[in-house]
Image (tube, rainbow, N blue to C red; front, side):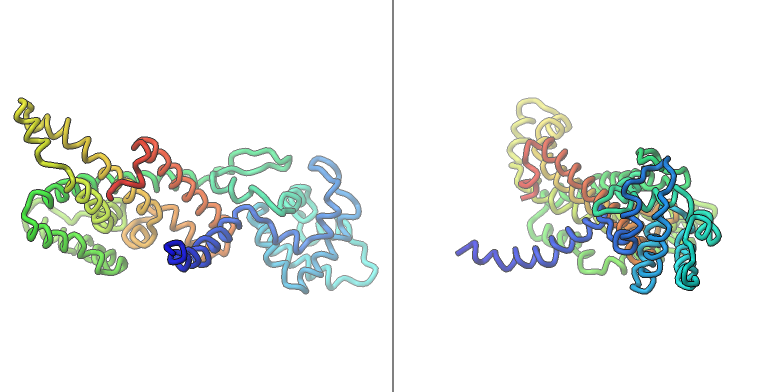
Amino acid sequence: MRRVLVLPLAGFLLVFFVVPLAWLLSLAVREAEVPRALPRTLAALQPWAPGQPLPAPLWGAFAQDLVAAREAGTLADAARRLNYEVNGVRSTLMRAARTAGGAAPGTAFDAAFFAAVDPSLASPAFFAAVQRARGPLSAYYLLAAVDLARDEQGRIQRAPADSRIYVEVLLRTLGISAAVTLLCLAMGFPVALLLTQVKERTADWLLVLVLLPFWTSLLVRTAAWVVVLQKEGMVNTLLLKLGLIAEPLTLIYNRTGVLVAMTHVLLPFMILPLYTVLKGIPPQYLRAAQSLGAPPAVAFVRIFLPLAAPGVAAGSLMVFILALGYYITPALVGGGADQMLSAFVATYTTDTGNWGLAAALGLLMLVTTLLLYAVAHRLSGGRVLAMGQ
């Protein structure tokens, strides 16, 4: 009977979470655009290897594919995909399709015909890119997500210097997430400890204050920090009146604003697991240690902190993983050098339509999260799932 009650939830998660996520992530390895638009060209390229002369039947097949794909509406997607590897080829492919479609009957399609449209269309480098995109699966987007690429011979090498950005962004994302986690731990631990020391009625009111941010929209909270941290905002005004600074500080549209806003948003996710674990630690343990001669600081470090470790691990893991995927807060209060990996995923998904690279970056974030979870699970002796309960 209990299994039957779980079926609606399991079905909902499968239909609206697992299947869409799996479909999106599959775009990181799928190659459908070029095979759909240029099937004859790929067939003519099948016996060809980079470094050899281009086969003579290729040009007629290429012309037929361009004309047919333009009429079917599939050429634009293939041109966009090839443009990721051969810069500027998108517009030349569309122009070549129009030229081939308007050619007189009996026109001989050869390398000179396409070189007259654009020399890149007659180059081995272009057709090597076409061959690499033949599908059905490809590692192109996965390699691009870690700043790697294949050369004309198919060897994996580092991407050009102007394209190597994603590893740096990933490291930046990990650094910001770690800094926010440490800040939340430094501020959340004393609050969670205080909640266990005061009367139950007082603790209830303090918990209301902890939970209060959950009742406000994330966008509203982030916009409020824009107002508070700007040069004419509350913080700078107060510091100027107290005489602590001579001129307004730059607290917004930089790393400082990102850390402040993200820490404020994620702090409850640190306090709640900590409070749950700290509340279950019997106070008699500390009193027993002190009665045996241990100073309060030693009793706290040797007795209390090890017992609080599951709460620290649970809160830190939760905050860190949530921080990895943050988008709105860095976009509103951060500068160009503070954007995290999720901002690139959003850009490629909604602005440029490069869903393959967006899926690869999303997969990179997912793998990073799973690795962190596995490390925490191992370090905790398999207690991650039970932390905070």
